[in-house]
Length: 56
Image (cartoon, rainbow, N blue to C red):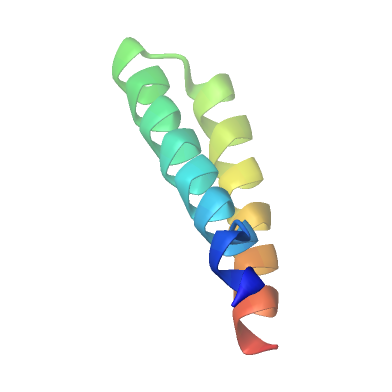
């Protein structure tokens, strides 16, 4: 019953993942390939963490 109000860490991580990908897309459109690569790498690392949590 009390678990109803607990926040889901995977949901927060997915939201951050989506934001990183969107920021990366905007960086790529501006021609800032270095920022795009860094944001994409960070998003991929976060995705690996999400997959590990979902498997548990």
